[in-house]
Length: 438
Image 1: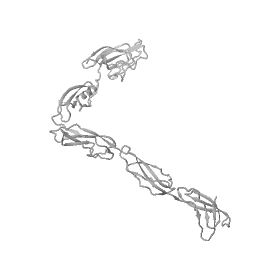
Image 2: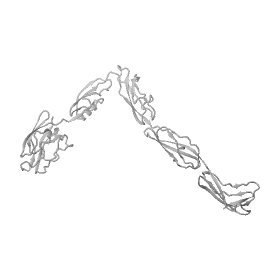
Image 3: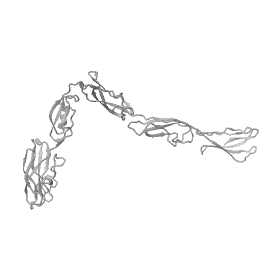
Image 4: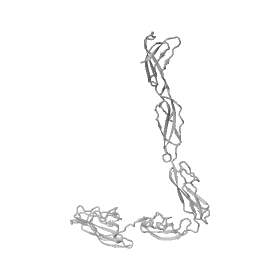
């Protein structure tokens, strides 16, 4: 094998290091001996050729005690070693620990307190490192060799066989098969394709144009062809995904295999693949223009009633509860779909007419009423909106021949249709007073 075996004595507290030293079986946990002046333990280690690496190292001793007759030391020592053809190691030596060896399941002698040293003999059989056979079928012989040696195995025999499906130079099969657990360093045998006398068609397939989510795959996308020396080859195409599939939005991979009809003349070519871009779809919003409302009416679900072709949520502007001013107003909505992978957000707008509200005019007069010729009468005009006064005007009126004249200089509220009359005309043959606003 060329490996180097070493048996000896150590008093290090961390030899070997579990998880660091390859193959470590046990570690020294009882050193240094708390009750003793000195203590040591036997060990066995195997090095690779040239001592480039430690294959394994194991601790052979046990916990020391003061039961050695007062010498103040506990020592376990490997004195002699032999190696057989199977790799088993035979050790002989002396031990003074009370629980030697530390592997009770395989202990040859139960530990007990005693005085002085005792001879021991042990056979140590190390487990052979394991490796998993990698899958190299379909790879080139060079790539397969790299994968095998990288797994801690070696390349075994390589044989050739004709194949109408595996390109020449690629691996047809391996033995042991992929996934088998074997001893490290085991050989993996390969069967490599020597090609075929059959003609190999060529699959031609270009990347299809982008589609929108919701579009099922059809012959527009699944349109591969097979030719040999420029001539079409009859056969069957098998696509993955299949015709009729609706793909999610994003970049998708389509693949195809071709089976020639004339298998006596043509071999099945390697599969081919293309990429297809599936764009997000835009939801359709349906929103009928709302009926006109009167100023003072707050927006509600009667006006904000848009629907969409897919599930999602709506955000309106202005929001529900808003009271719009009179005139033509624009309402807008933003729709966010629940499925944000396949759908984009969408917006829409409608217009709504807000009619002016009707106002009510209240007229109150103070004494004297009726008045005498030449007397002034104070009159208050109040224009009421929806529960709130919009305009108030106070004036003094005097007898005149052509009625009552009132000034109307205040601005009108834009939400109402109102305004004080410029003239109030009386019935015929009666005298009225002309008023002047103050």
